[in-house]
Image (tube, rainbow, N blue to C red):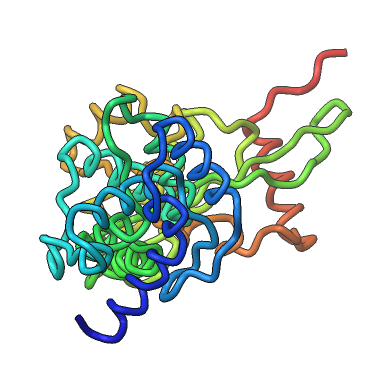
Length: 295
């Protein structure tokens, strides 16, 4: 028996001595165990401060059968090996962690406890953390993989990938009086950062986007891929038919990952502060495309 094991065994014996030094009726034994379980202890090599009634009764039984040696800690049979995580639980952990890499271990354990059947044992925190590290599901690794994936999504040559987006533009005067908001449609080449075409329109509908795309293709040729978000106009059957007929692959941003098209988002176009010349341009574009306001 090494020094650590002996220290733990002696501590355990010191607690259960009132339970084993005399033969007690079952009811009295349980009552004394409950009294001992309600106290606080400085447990060697542990952060716990209390011992449960069941543990005290188990130690008492082991001592009666095999003496002090039976109170030493039992080595784990699977020591040094990762504890098995059920396949369904593993799939749930991976889904929850990939949905939100910032989800903490404590949150995962709570959600697993809610999802688990009553008769199934829950995971310990140490088993969960080992599983996350083994599957490369830690917050740091997931965010690193995500950043790497976005970094790799870059075109080498012009016209391999175009990105397209729409920006809410300034309010401009309309013919006949009143004001109308303008909308900026733009296409940007991923490799060269060149803008094949950008134009203000009086609406944000499919017709405005298709007109912008038509002029961009007329100016710079047909791109291999067109990368956009999941807005309704970008998923229209008409756009899909046009793309298929001229040989463009439509790619949509994965849900909840807007950073994938960061080069063509409004901050990149730097249009939040609209210069006067852009306002004049918006006013001219909208005036040409907008019927006069009825009086």
